[in-house]
Length: 123
Figure (cartoon, rainbow, N blue to C red):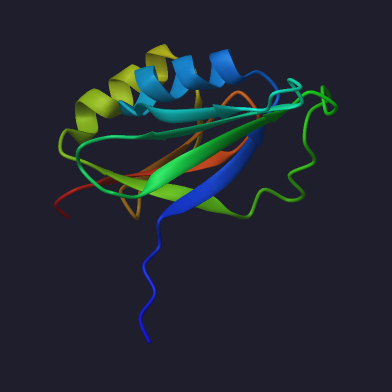
């Protein structure tokens, strides 16, 4: 029996703000969207040409408050082919929350507080 990872879900409080962040910060674009007939939710799958894996962003009408992310010990990781340019962009966006210079990585945070690890493609 085999399993293939296909997507991760993040619940968000502002779907358009999140889409704008992920496109600017990581080049992820909307692939498909499902909106409830009654307007109670919007689900948007985003990704890029680098991988089949997708990030599912879910907005729930009845949950306008920020999500409790606990101790923020979980994250998604992204390789980048231009670590220095990515770091400059994320500095300009003021979204870097932690840098580990010894490991050569850093973390950014999205509008809802989810952490995203940035790793150089070649170490």
